Every structure is written in C-alpha cells, then in structure tokens.
Image 1 (tube, rainbow, N blue to C red):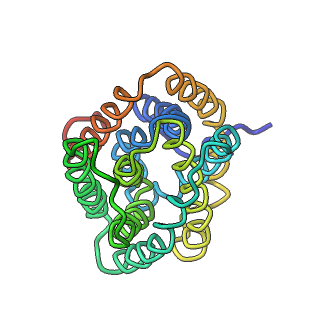
Image 2: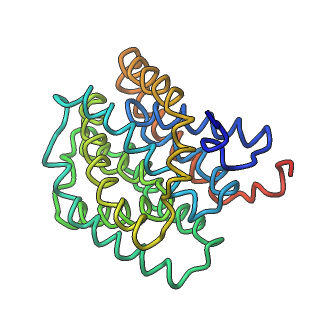
Image 3: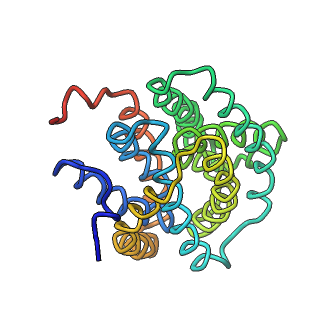
Length: 261
C-alpha cells in the first residue's frame, strides 16, 4: 500500500508536532474545552495558509462532533442551540463576502477581532453579580450568532465566541459542553457545501491527510471527557476564559518571525 497518498504534504518536524497537537486539541475541545483549538489554529494557518487550513480542519471537527454529541446527547439545552443558529447563517454570508474583499493573509486578523469582542464580553460577564438573570434579548443571540458564524467560517475558531454566549447563560459545565457540541455539529455540516463548492478547499487529498489524525482525535476526546468529570464548575469557567484570552493574543502574533523554516 502506498502510504504517501495519506501524507501529501512535505512537512518539517515542528510542523508534524503542530499537526499532532491540533488533533489532540480538536478532541479535547469537542468533549471538554471548546476554546482550546483556537490556540493551535494560527500555527496550522501558517503551515497551510489561513483560508486553506479551514478546509483541512473542518472534516476533523465534524468527526469529533459526532463523538461529542454521542456522549453528551442528554446534556443539550436546545433553546440555546436554535436561538443563535439563524444568525450564524448571516455570519456565513458575511464571511463569504469577506473572502472576496479581504486578502488571505488578513483572515487571521478577522479571526482575532471576532474572538476579542467575545473575550471582552466574557470578562464583563464573569464580573456580573451571580444574582443577575442571563441576557434574554434577541439582540444577544443575534450578536453572538453572527460573530460565531463569521469566525467559524473564516477560521474554524468560533469556540470562544460560543463559550461567551453559553457562559452568559450560566449553564453547568456538562450542559455547556453538550449544547456547544450540538451547535457546532449543525454549523459544521452547514459549512461543508460552501467549503467544497465555493472555496474548493476540501479535496480527496485533504481528506486522506485528515485520516492521519483520527487516533489522536479519539485520544483527545477521551481526555476531554475525563477533565470535565474531575474539574470543578468554577475552575472550568476560569479555564475557558484563560484559553479564550490566549487564543486571542496568539492570533495577532506573526509566528513566521519565531519558527524555523
């Protein structure tokens, strides 16, 4: 069997390490901490290109989504899935428009800006009184739906955006993970036609390469389930905030100045 068909890219050692970390983080993010993938996405975007990397990563996200919704199928709060969903489609449209107007190298700054808005709201939300009711206005779901749809389309990094929304709803950690899993499972399936038919960045070549990470994603998913079980509610929230902060900072860093070639 010619194994070269599964490895169509000539990667350096550090790039392979980043690739393996991506698989682990995808698994952990889908079953535990949905902001963690955004930490490694900037590096993957540097390796394959900001736009091209979205097509490489998407099928792996869907694979992990299936595992997550299978495990957390009883923990979902459906109203928090469907409220932002129509607005996410508007975010899709904005991302497609940005594809025509914004150079590829600027995509990562759009990603970072999207997360930064969410990060500010998340910090503000964590300083609110616990006695305050969750935001209920239609505009709140609209804001995060559009931001989430936009950021997931241009970079598969809407995790921190959705984290802000669901933390604002004060969901317990398991409901948080289950609701996030179903939201992104639906969103990622809706993204497939655009990625395949309009952006042409999901091909047989990328799908075969994605298969190399399947075992690592499974390991990450098991790890994510374990961490959610053992971590406290308050520490879980703090971890999500910290991961969102790190992911935002990294998106504005020019990694090409620090990594080997």
